[in-house]
Every structure is written in C-alpha cells, then in structure tokens.
Image (tube, rainbow, N blue to C red; front, side):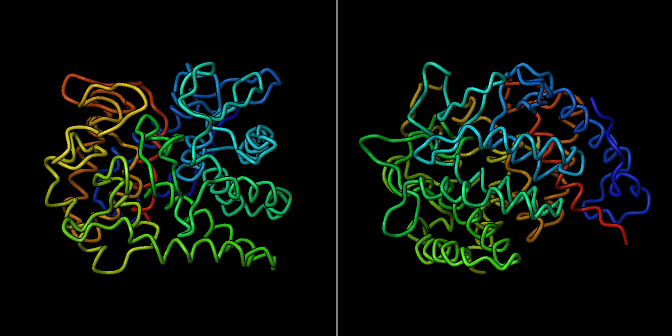
Length: 390
C-alpha cells in the first residue's frame, strides 16, 4: 500500500483562509479520516490491481463507477494517479458491445450493469453509468493533465454516452413499461419519463467532454455542445414554479428532488431566479431536510417515494434517510445565500462523523453502511474548497 504524500491543502492548514471557519483540529481530523477511509477501502482484484470499494473496510468486492468518480473528483489529491488510470481502464474494459458502461466491475473482472445483486439485478442497466464514466475520465484528465489517456479513451466514453436513452428533448428518458435504474443514489426508486438527475449528469458530462475536446482541438466537441444545449433548453420541463424546485421525473415519482435541484444550481444550468429560489428553499426548510448535517432526498411534504423497485421502509435508506453524499454541491449552494447556515451544517456533520462514525445514511436510531467512503470525500471537498491559501 502506498503512502499518501501531504498535499498543499494539508501542508498549509495553519495559514489558509478558512471560508467556513472550521477549527484547524476539525480540518485536520477530517483530512486524516478521509485518508483512512480511502486506504481502508482498497482491495486487490484477482489480477493484482488495487480497487477502491464503497466502504472503508473493504467489505464490498467491486469497483463502482459512480462511487469511484466521487472519490476521484472530491479527493483526487489523496489518490495515486497511476492507480486512478488503471482503475478507469478496469471499468472501461467492462463496457458491453452495445455501449453500456458497467455499474461496477467485481474483483474478478466481471462487469455488472445494474444495481442489485449480481444474480438479481434491479434492471438491465443504470442510466447514469455512461455519464459517470465520462465524468470520471474528465476528472482524471483535468486533475493530472493526462491528454494522452483522454485521447485514447474519448471514443469509447462517447459510445457509453450515446447508449443512454434520451427523447427528442435531449433529456434522459426512462421507459414506463421497461424502466431502468436511475441515478445510483436513488437506484431503488422507479422514476419514469424525463429524469432530472440523470439529465443533469448527462449535461455535466457533455460539458466536461466538450471542454476537453476544445482544449485538444478535436472536432468531436460539436456533438457535446448540441447535447448540452438541448438539455439547457428543455430542463425547465421539470421545473415546478410553485415550489421553485425541480421534479425528480415527470411521470412516476413526480416529486420534488432535493438533491437534484441543488445539483442543477451546481452545474450552472439554472437562471438567477431559480438559483435564489432553490437556495432559499433549502435554508427555509433546513430543519425538515437535514439531520446532523446530512440531507434527505425528499421534500418535507413527502414521507417516501411513490414507486420503488424494491420495498423500503420510509425514513430508511433512499426512502427518507439522511445522507452526506450530496453535501459536496449542496453546502456551496446554501453558502451563496447564507454562509452562517452552511457553517452550521458543516460543523454538525463533522461532529456526527467524530461521534458516530462516517456512515452512508442515518436517521433517528438508524444508520446504514458504516465507514462509507463517499460520505467522507463529499465533506472533505467542501472543506478543501473553503480553505484557499492566500
């Protein structure tokens, strides 16, 4: 196992400007806790490659595409770039002939395309596989300036994006009769019609691919621009004027999407009025939406999702529990409107991490998956971005 080299962020903790006014002790603790989770998640594949699994004690025996993107995007400075590159290749090698990217690839090299058990998938595939693979490639290429690897993989990743089901609006579309899994952190939720979060992921991945293609003077940037422009034009088909938030979908589960609405702001797709309304909604409903600094998917008016692939008690898991995963984009969105609220939420979650461990999701007398790596990296990136050396 390699030794982590202190990053400039870690080396300059005492002299950095701390936007969220966290104590140096808390910042140091979170950095070390994140490193511990990342280190603990590593298992060796049957071919000898180190894989980063979702939990910090290596219980899961696979490399998940979306989880790994969140690790690389949010804590790439704590990872070995050589391992990142090899892991991306490991995932891409699992692409199906039709273009579908894997949900995950097991330690033995077997690709799985849908959430659920290896032998009991919830669907044929997940609609976020392709966008997350593109985002993972772009995140690595941007952070480590690896143009050669991007050029090598861009066509394969494009094929993965082309596989994703979209309708004439350009928005990602989930068939009502044969629905696929949607955004992986709501993969048990049977959203159909046009999808908010999946469309935003497609938008963001198209934007990032477009930027890199332009940077390297590639003509293929044009298709990505067309894709993202169509989503920009039509994303408001999912906007609810009354609440000022976005629906998760426009057929089944036409319910306010808390994570997705904040993510829309983070991607830059919202106008100023929408941005203000979404930030205001999060702040005004803070006591119902957040618990110990962590955020539920659902609005205060919804106890649970209207349709799911599998039964799930309300208040648990993706059906009403509270997660740290979205804080990477939610805290900065709140900070635009109320830095005081953002500071309070960050302090609450760090205190919960220190007292009760870093879990996947929690509620009163409930927690799931201790030592959840993405929970750590999602908070780490907020603290890191709020600490800039001057």
